[in-house]
Length: 472
Image 1 (cartoon, rainbow, N blue to C red):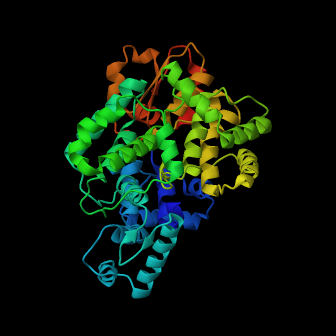
Image 2 (spheres, rainbow, N blue to C red):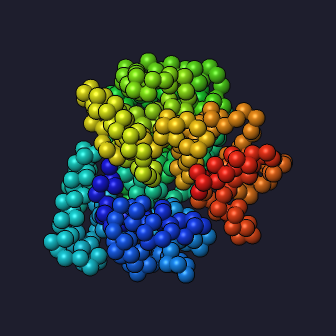
Image 3 (cartoon, rainbow, N blue to C red):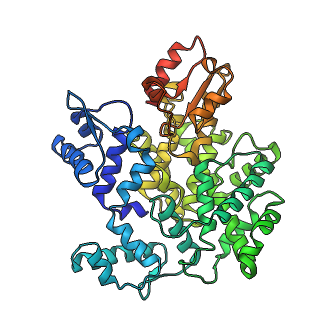
């Protein structure tokens, strides 16, 4: 949703960074072909990265380009650098956090014309209208839950420093998640932990507006029926009763909502079987879910409801679309890449039929669902496996898919840190382990390891060859 309003040039810059970030050099022709633009446009975009955004783009003797993640940082760091140039995000932030300065002063600070400044305000108002929020006296007003989510997204995802992080709240939020992890036998990624922390930080942020939290009936129903550890409330109460004081009951509901948003482990196979069964039953009994899964099974002539990775991908997708609990989250973290045209057309047909029931699924969301499902449905073979990097929220789906499609004789482990992978793997030469492509690696690792981030058991040369081209 929010990407619809961010400047197109910045979004193109992010897409170009996605393409160039890595060990391989890519020619100008390759860039224009992949991004569906002319070579001249590709050259202009390279200059834009270098001269306007001050991102170092390397060029070899053949005129091909790359961006070195070990000098420029990972995709998240570079993305934040790019988004810091967004006037739309700056304007949105101005209206989100109360300021004594007048809007005309803000316009002068940005060195833009008055007409452009008020055009930016109109664009922000249009975006807020989609969230049922509005601006009054230079302040965003409306449902404070959505205001909090908006502040958290701008802070965590786009790197805008809208409120100060309290270290004590960070420690308390980690304790809460540790309780959930132990009880449900799951493990939250660093991305999920940081997002949960940022959401709970909004409950105490001095510069965010304070008012009663309104939970619509359907939201309350979802919160009350959400499966969570028995001692979750006790842990919250021990850690946050002194912080939230008289507002504890409201903030407790908000903490459950925050947990629902980050917990994408609903069909994680490491969960206790009774917990997993309860989640699956509740999910599959939902009429909307049944209509969608029926559409997929009819279209692809295969049984999918027994596949946890498929149900998990749908869960995240539907959570974004139908619950309307957090209209900005989850899908906006994904890099929507190029998808198979035939698959996209098929999924589009299913979704269009599903829209008859009153839902409005955007093209952005359809692309996201295609990206999630294309490695699994379209060919169902090793050569279609794609590592979900920089999107830790979906990493468990990748793990479940690997379990389905890799030979059972191959053991594998997924790590977010390469040093941890080396430390915890007894025989690294005999283990298949996968590491996020954008994780920070020690400088001493040679380029081949930095490129591949994967080691293979003996006797899997062909598999290594296939996965090498796929993962890179």
